[in-house]
Length: 258
Image (tube, rainbow, N blue to C red; front, side, top):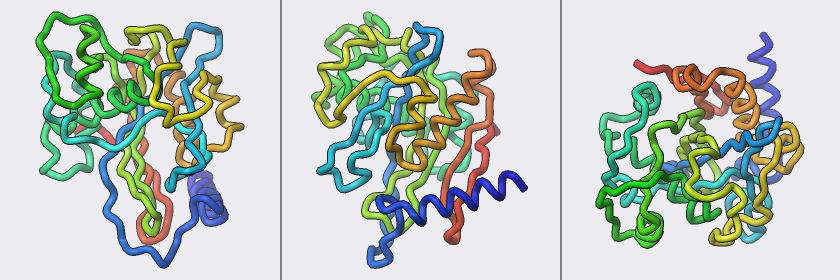
């Protein structure tokens, strides 16, 4: 009964949100693949995450605080890197996906999260390498010229969310989580981003819940709070929450490794 009550409250929140309620005049829009990276900085007693504010000029979620991320680019699936994701992470990514979602495209989701984070924040989730990894994409090219490869081996997959119908933008977003210790540069090096996210800063999870967040982002922050209670080695095997709407109702299910 508690879960049903919580879902009903989320339905009400979304319906009453001026920024997120449906526009019934809009046609059906197929969601596009997107990826987000949650970086957890545990250098202090209380873990902090990196968030930034979307510009008022954005058509999708203006003025909201979010984690860095964006849509997946075809270049992400074409990038061949030596680093591999953990088996439980791959299996969770495979859950409830189409047969056309190849291993390269699954890895591309994680790579997109790393690329978008580098572009928006200047932070490099990478490790030194001597491998000759190349890309024609300008962002990947500058990333790889640092002598690093994307750090995939300790990346966690923590949530998936699909934007409801009748919105001006729709995304099928995979949320990944990484520890700040995996960064090639310092957590404080957040002044070299693209400027797409404003007011970039590290913030505790309790404080983050007080920001002006999209409703799903609020749920993801609570998900991260719960997930961080488990030891690192157990986190990768934890069920992954999947947030979506079906027949006008908000649904949360768990993606489990097959």
